[in-house]
Image (tube, rainbow, N blue to C red; front, side, top):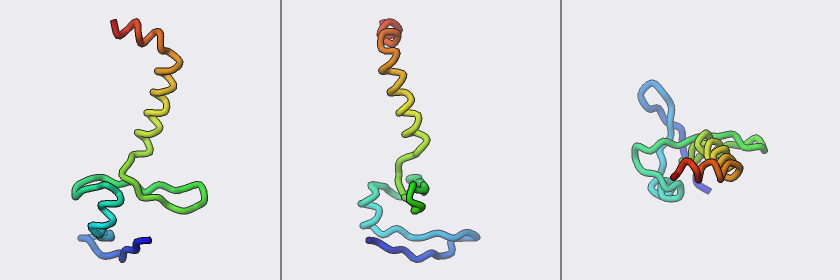
Length: 75
């Protein structure tokens, strides 16, 4: 487990990610990370947008259900 200390960043608060934490998250300086709430009341820090995941799930459903229409449009 990794731990971080909250520090002042300008007029806000933040924490510094170590190289090890950035490697584990597969992020680089300038990337956006998302803090999401988990069903058990905890939090998850991830580089993946939960909105994008939801949109892709919907798109996959449409692609599966309307496969023939998409094939016709691709011609």
